[in-house]
Picture 1 (spheres, rainbow, N blue to C red):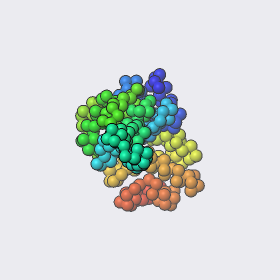
Picture 2 (cartoon, rainbow, N blue to C red):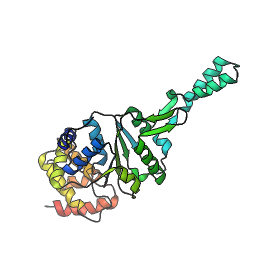
Picture 3 (cartoon, helix red, strand yellow):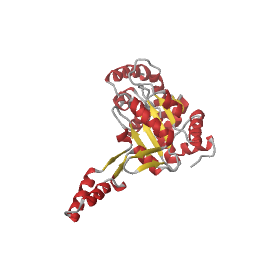
Picture 4 (cartoon, helix red, strand yellow):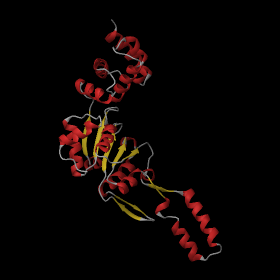
Length: 294
């Protein structure tokens, strides 16, 4: 499970199509070797989730994803009981036992909370199945109580199930947390993690990423697309500047339409792959008119 060096990790990630700079490869390497969670922050579409997926693929580990949302609590992250199966089991016991005494009833009640009726949610599944990669995606969308719960689990890599006892990870899972920074996370959680801010890549790096993830797109078109996207990111009037994910979608859309050279008509027609707000569409069309009009 261990990675020999920063370079070996970067090469493994590259084999999956994920290109990262030395600073990101270094903090990911340290996270793996120190068995510390890795907290990634950055704008949407900069490759935070994709890094966890690439780590899992390159290390041949299962990826277990916990998608955070407003109102999520420990139950959604840990476990639940399979009530329909429990009811069927109870009815079967009643049919067999008939008028059995109180001791038989007590035993039947205990059997309802057997491990076979346990539905493991992402955090519990990661502890039980480790080595695995646990991706806690968009943790900034959860509330303070859920952060406190995560902090406790990540400090001990164990959880307690009243009916069954304590579940401990034989090997701590690889934990990656992502945040779009819609709110600040608490210092206690940050202190438990190694931290890295993922920024949008520079022009040459983004061209490399595009060519790696979408090799069907020609070199010339890939560079044109990235040059336009980079200029759009420099604007301060877009509600949602395009990320790398949008760059990939736009380039693939253009390729599917048989585009070999970016022009105003096809660029405007495919903006649905690049921007996701009507106001941004209008602003980008005006910008493209200046950038691509002949």
